[in-house]
Amino acid sequence: MPPRPTKFSSFTQKHWRHLSIATLVVGLILAKIFAPDLLDGNQNTTVDIPKTTSPAPATKQGLEQLNTQLAKSKIDHISDGDSFSVRTPDGQIYKVRLRGVDAPEKSQAYGEKCKQSLIELTGRSTIVVTAHKSDRYGRLVVSAKAGGKDLAMEQIRKGCGWFYVAYASELSPAEREAYAALEQQARKNDTGLWREAKPQAPWDYRKQKREAD
Image 1 (cartoon, rainbow, N blue to C red):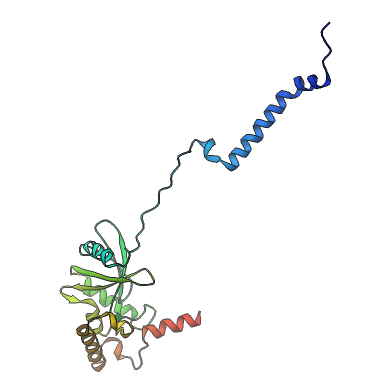
Image 2: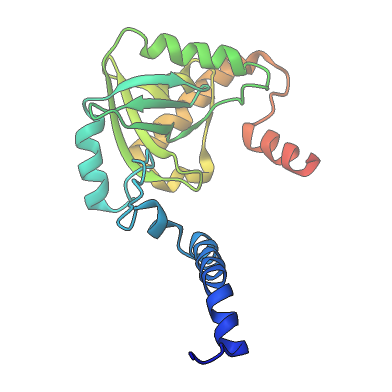
């Protein structure tokens, strides 16, 4: 006579399959939570980092390399009387700011007129852009010429900007003298924004807005 099954052997025969299935299910759930790639077959998944449009580091070598591209760039968009964007042949877009001039903000008096002035200066000419540094907003601070004329000087001459004296040390002595003379001439002739009795300097306007916010 065969031996009578014990309580333990009876439990094993009756419930082992159910216990194994439950263990497998729990294991799959934990794997899905903590190692989803193993279940999805993506053990070697990589993430493509998008190409940025931020300026090259403002080192001498970095700017020299960038200026090679900027020499062949075209204007992409004009923001205001001293700021615009250029697109290089490789499709990169750089926001730039003219050095030596501070034009009215768009929301200021003469803001739109001075933007239009820059559009007219650049609309029919090849632009020659040279980057000198990048500012705290990530823009390139540049000198730029259209039709052989310095855009910053032309904006000041047309009464569309102040000589930006806060950064005068970044200009050569000859440039500082020329920019200051052009502003004095525009003031004397009531050209552009100097028709106003007390035009507000853009840096004062920006400070006022920051304090109001």
